[in-house]
Length: 272
Image 1 (cartoon, rainbow, N blue to C red):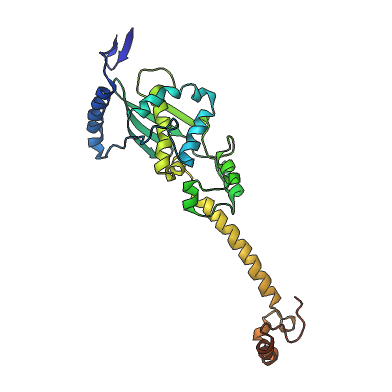
Image 2: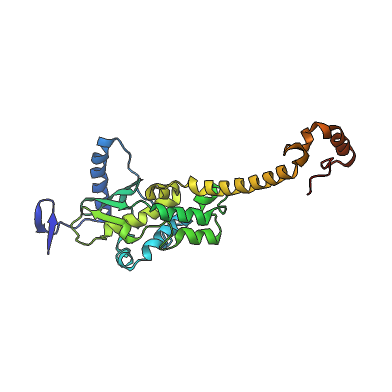
């Protein structure tokens, strides 16, 4: 059978073990990264469990990929590549994943993720208002079932649909989801295990907005309570000012406070 290499159509190259492919890939990657003065960030799996990801964000990313048949049918091809350490470098930036995978050659994989639609993001914020206690809890996935359901909803949640992703690999495989792309897609989940904040960078939204919505709700409730207390403290005889500063009532007010501990307007005009 023929194989398309960098020089054109040719016969399949000589067999190389996985270790040899990785060794060649590491050398090729070192030359590429030397120009950018960047250190490689390989994807390393520290366990032998079937499911690669172990935290909420990593698992939710992988579960979302497997939700779609057009991706799920191709993803298993990349599991072996990921498990044997062939993803030599994986970096995440705003809306993009770039990785290098060791194969017969060193292949470059680029995955583009469309920004989360503004209306969709606002709906998520609204549904989570007052339900997320802290940034630490959010990144750890320590959230109520209701919030988790909002974040992972297939249509209205945070995770991308296939139509929001562009997949590209420099290998000769004509399939959109080749084994190298599949390995990188799973690799993103493992990266999110260690650095969940990268998910929000990938989707180009600010996770702090989920927290500020909760804070805003709390402050609004507090202001309503304070407003009620101020209203109850007003003296209608004194044009709406506090009866505590009303001169005609001051002496009586101080006497009432000393005797009962919680005075009311000495004119008796304020109802509680």
